[in-house]
Length: 378
Image (tube, rainbow, N blue to C red; front, top):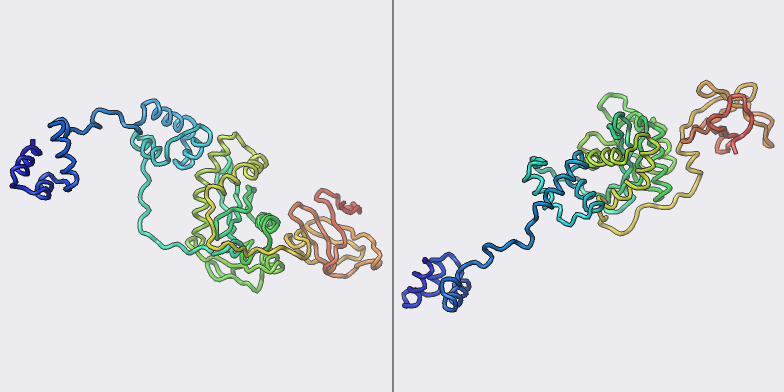
């Protein structure tokens, strides 16, 4: 009826098209469209033809119930994004993530996530892969009913994880294993960024600066490899690693539980073969520069560097004591014995024990080899 009044004013010449359109709250072009419809069909031409029709994208009740039931019965411990990834891949979900989020929130199945508060600027990523490698560990109930440490070694430029595994306790050997797996996969990197844990650095005063003049075994190995060792002095400085662990804690335990995995061996096999490739595909980003800072490793075998080194003096019977065990140095063609010589006892990641005189390896013993055994490891 309002349009009819305005139309009569326009028809009599009292109102221009612009004035008529302004009264109706529309633009001049819309008013001209309404004029054509009104003159052709009368008042019926002004009705919105969409009224009473089912929307093309309108969701059926059955589809909403299916998504709600799937989340409640099988994925109630998953985050929304994690649930959406699984539903899309394994249950042929065709809807968008935003539709899933809004639908489950509207039905009260999940609660909206609160705001993150004040914005803080993140540290810019390194422009090339291989410029900085992060390593950190997180103790968490990754496997239901037990607490273990997850060791993650990732690239700052892309957040790609090169090494990830569960271990009983974080320490020197687990850190070296992560470094070794990265070196074998990618090559030598420029710098290594980590917290001030005792296996990474010696810190004379609690909360103080690290003493780089007295490196730990990890520090010694990095120095031999020519890699800069950088200490983080606050959790905020390790923000990228902290956020990564937040994401992992919201995904990995749920995946392991869904797969029914209950041992470290089973979990690590699943992480390497299934979880890690899919996780990197989802969360890694492109580096700013296409070039790589990784360089091929050339030099002494990694097994002889990424291990613990302890100095010992050879006894009069040509043996060396180490951690309550006695190892006999076998005869060789170089000299009759090594009595009173200083040697280095190296404990490798797989438990083997090697004895070095300078850079030369004198013997290697298997992890379970008896103290009195004289045979060398194959």
